[in-house]
Image (tube, rainbow over all chains, first blue to last red; front, side, top):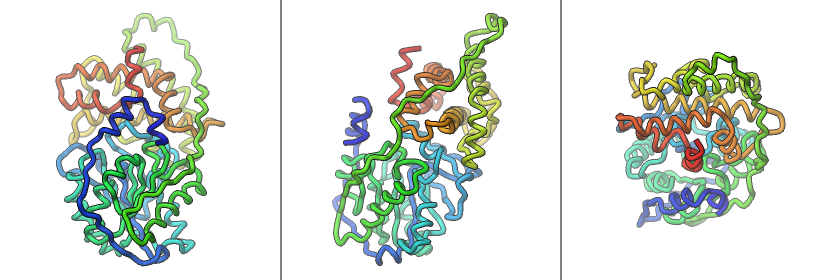
Length: 154
Length: 249
């Protein structure tokens, strides 16, 4: 696969042998047409506003809230991993957090609207550790009338 | 990401996911996923390329209109970043004779500071052009960052600027600040605005004095008594793809 083919053998083997959770169920939620959807971004890039507390390894420190009206100059990342590229985000936030592109798609009517709040996790952890936060955020997202989540890994 | 997709979908909110490692997505089976052939850290592809980013976004968002799933599609367009190697515009610095009196660590610190000074005009221009920087997460002023990192070499950790986080974590943020300074500076230079992450990595870790200092820091922190510092040395600071260079020290 592209990109894995550019890694050295050790990295490639590490990623391919990484344990992945599997699920017995195949959940499937329906929504209206794309032009009516309200979209929220959830990233695992560990991004947050500059004046937020950096991500730590403290128990329960799982996510940060990124307001939809955040300005690019206020965003940084404190993700602990150095094993993914940070330079794309350094040059242009949209590589990791495409809020400006989403707003353009909303303005031209391709999507309905962009959510008021987006969420950033520091990934690199077992999904089991993320589940309580996801369950906690689902009703919050619904109150923001979100009916499409764009999930972006790093 | 696959796990989050399952949780949100079970709770009734449709999701669509970018996949960077197809093999993981095949196992985790999120409801809707678009595999993209981009580097880790670049789920939407190339920086400063609105048309390309929009194509990626439309492709992943359109999966929301799929009638049934799980669906895993491929985005077959390569991102238009450059694989040309970096032309290092950092000038070699001549040191005064007094250098001979200094310890190896002091010489190394001075060399990195000089290298940073020669990049500083490009950093300032990048800041002006982009209107933003990701440098500054450690809370340590850029002018003091090398001294801060350098102080860890002789085992006497410098004063921690934050009382709510361990010094080892601040050290990691300081190394991120240093790397961000170099990357933001070099990508402001003409003709090398869109290098791939791999090209930048090879330049920083293979050719700069700052990269060499951080490789040495990794070795130094491995011997620490502090478990968190050992973790910083083991899994942070130096990407695993570049760790082999420590043999070149």
